[in-house]
Image 1 (tube, one colour):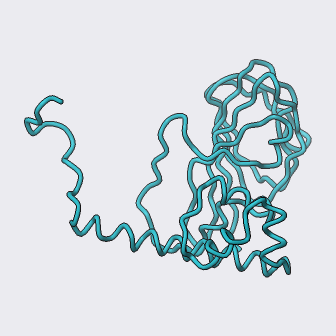
Image 2: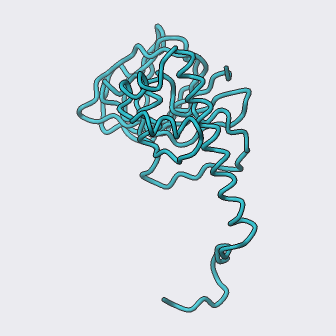
Length: 215
C-alpha cells in the first residue's frame, strides 16, 4: 500500500474515540424505534406475533427481538415485515427522531422495494427517506425494461416529481398525455391517475420523488 503523504481524505477515527462510542447508542435507538413501529402497526391490525410471523415468513422469535429492540434486522427482513403489515418500509423508521445531515446511496445501490407498479415489471429502488415529522418524502430510481408493462392508473396521496434520465415514453396524467424524453420532467398532484401509457424507447430510467403529509 502506498504511503500516506498527507494528501486525500483524513483517516477514519480510531477505535475508542468519541465518534466510535456514539455508534452503538445510535444503533440501539434505531432498533428501539423500529421495534415500536412494528408493534404499533401489528396491534392496529389486531394481529398476534404468530399471525405476523405466518404472513411475513419471519420467525416469531425474530419478530419478538425486533419489537423489543434487541436485534438489528436486515433490510430484507424489514421489507418482509412491512409488506405483511401493508405499509411502506420507510414507515418503520418514523419514530427514529435523530436527524441526519444526508443519506448517501452509492451508484447501483438502493433498497429494491415493492410498490404498485412492481407487478407490472417496474423496478423501484428507494434512495432515501425523510425523517421530518411533518412530511414524508421518498425518492425512487424507477427502471422500465422489455418485461415492463404500461400502467397509466397509478393513484396515491401527495405530490410527485419525475425526471427522465434515460429512454422515451408517453406519460398519461388524467386526461392529458406528455411525450417525455431524457431531461424532461413532470410535477403533479399524485391523487390524479397517472403513469406510462406507451414505452417508446427502452430501457427507461426515471427519478421519482414522492411527497405526502405525515400521518
